[in-house]
Image: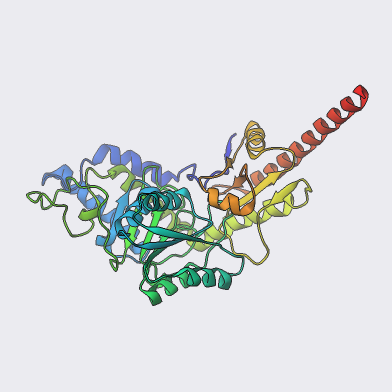
Length: 392
């Protein structure tokens, strides 16, 4: 049986409730907000309920909760929609390419400037770094809540507070944190929170959410049909229509609604405890193998993600071997080159990311497979050494 430990990319398998919601959506729903007939009406009702479910879960307003294609789409919408020519933006050295690339693209086009700050193991140092980079024209701080490589949790509440003190927009990437940390747009102080619907919220792929408190207006990336203000050649000014055009992913919205219900039933605390326990088990077992390096630091808070490398093998080789043993883990740079540059892992790492459906037995078996692989590498190395000695 194949065991998925690559849930930081997309949770798999999906809960039964989500699978049922998707099957039902295919049969029952059409297009939302297009027409006044029965099919359109019940579809619009479901989409509103899904939007309300997401908004309530993150303490956002319903009308300010936007459905997107994924977290990358949401982040691009926020970054490109908030920043203006002449602005300066601050990002961290743990950012995913969904933050790094749009910022670099805007900078190369001569529109903005940016600074990359170092994230330390001590939160106070990280905050000081951000504070030192703030300029008169700094418009936004864009940062991940938790690294998709190491799982390190940034001091996002304190960063949000710092941004509010300086009148700066705080755009948060919640892809690895939503569904596993108790996040609140209102209480945590973030201006804009972006996340995926298909990771910790257990929806299907092709789903994402952007939530805003509207302090900083967001210009739309696209214009088109919204089903509202159709006589006007201009995109509507009101949300969510201003940032949503074209046919919504209705099936995806239904899946996210069901996924959030699943998370609420399991509870954030329960999911965090379960997945963190599995990470602790893996770290304890792998730390006993001299040839394995774990990318974790004492005293640092993490979401349930563990990155490691095996001496004498590339991350891709390690993951390929584990795949033959029935374990799915992602190897490489994880679309986060800044983080790997920081770690000094030029070839990347192997990433372990459990879910609600992962179990301790499989985690222990995985550790045993890593140990077996290390022994195989040792045997090959010894054979090569013997062969070399014989030739001499």
